[in-house]
Each structure stands twice: as C-alpha cells, then as structure tokens.
Image 1 (spheres, rainbow, N blue to C red):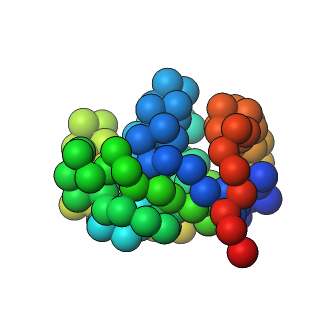
Image 2 (image 1 turned 120 degrees about the horizontal axis):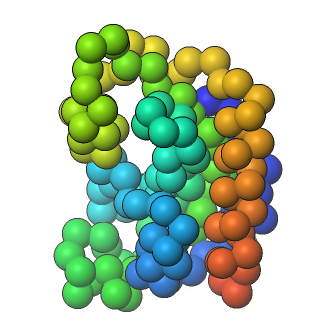
Length: 140
C-alpha cells in the first residue's frame, strides 16, 4: 500500500454527488463500506490487482439506504494505491467479484507496487480531485 498526498484529504461533500462524479471516471463504491465509512475504488490495471482507493468517513447521515444516502455527507481520508496478488488459476470474474465484495482473499494483500502503478494512481487521483474541486473543506 502506498499513501498518496491529496487535496481531497479532509474535504467534506455530499456522498451522492461524490459517488456520481467519481462513477463517471471509473470509481465504484467498494464492497467494504458500512454505515459510517467506505471507499471509492478504481481499478488501475487490466488484471484487477492494482487499485486506487479513496477512503471516506460519514460526517452526517447514513449509507444504508438510497433515500438516506441522499442527505449523507462524507469527508475524505488519505487515498492510497493498493496491490492484491491472487493465487494462480483464479479466473478474472472471480477476482473482480472477490475484490468488490471482499469475499476473495488475496495471496498477497499488500504486494510491492511498481512505479508505473503509483503514477497511474496519481493521475487517476488528479482526475478525481479536479471533479470534486468544488467541494468545501471539512469544518475543523
């Protein structure tokens, strides 16, 4: 895992606004969310092993139902690039389902990350930062 410096850290925004804007550039709400926190994930490689994660905390509201999520506000934590290496022989669809739903354990959950993936993560992060630039910083 490699943490990335980001203008998003500490930014508070509407959950649905962030979700919709980030979905337009390939992010999805990771399957590891709960009512008070979650992560937006974007796959960086074609094998589904390298991801940019944008973790967030819920500052008001809840994520458990769409009608409540409309009023939910979130604050971003430090983003990071993560690489999961899966056992040989696991097909791509199973890997994606496991990654998104957190059912598939990786052979190496924190594998070494090659420099090109760190740069790809920074590029994807810059894209996300520009989309969410209108979000206001969280109150101290």
